[in-house]
Image 1 (cartoon, rainbow, N blue to C red):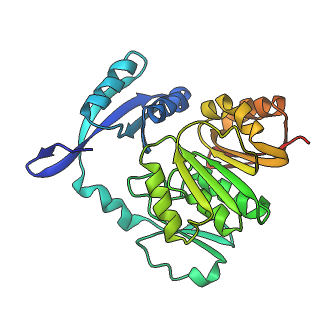
Image 2: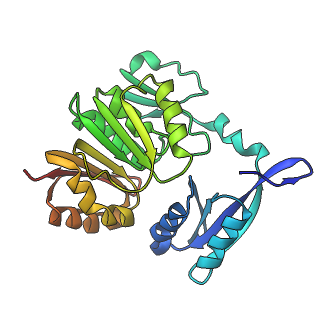
Image 3: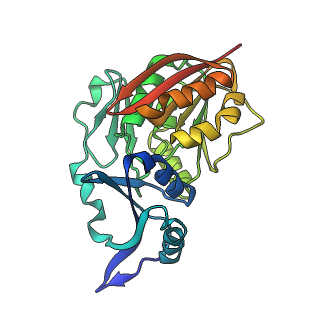
Length: 284
């Protein structure tokens, strides 16, 4: 994307939506459906601002025009020069006693303490691995994934969960993300962690219909988990595991009920900082 410049400083168009908590998931999903690579939440009083880059100014304006009657929406031009400042304040993510996720630009002094260390560069903010839902799923993978499993990672982003699965001994990992740039970022991260021979990434939003996996991870928003229930369940081997995350605790029952009706039973669920992870087992 070409960035307009002001006085020689590169700038990018950001869509800004102001929503209440009840509309958060719907608004975030609308942004992702329109190509948002990452969504930043800013809590302003009782409201939440969602900031995202969709493309150029024309794409951003078109999105705002479409949704302005439902949400307060606008386009802000943001200087890109300080965009890497956050890297200086990034810290390793200690998932559990076995796994740490470390920013690629950092020196990690405690590397020898952990059997598995994932090095991640999210580049244009596809996810460093510090979000509660990512930490939930990474921890569950450490505990539940059998060696030599085949794994489908829906909403793979920077590739962090795919890489975790590969380092834990998966024989094949397929990551899918709807964001256009996610594939290249995930592939670079897989190469960085020397797991590119067992990982594959492609751009899209549909679940493969010609293959079944031992384990499926779907770290995406609740509305998408509900929409994809049938194809996700179909993509799991009988007796296989589905790990669902990306949902707020208040959407837990809706998602569990849909997947139980679709042929799964609940094996485990847990909550971290208001976000929920659910483990389902497909019936034999």
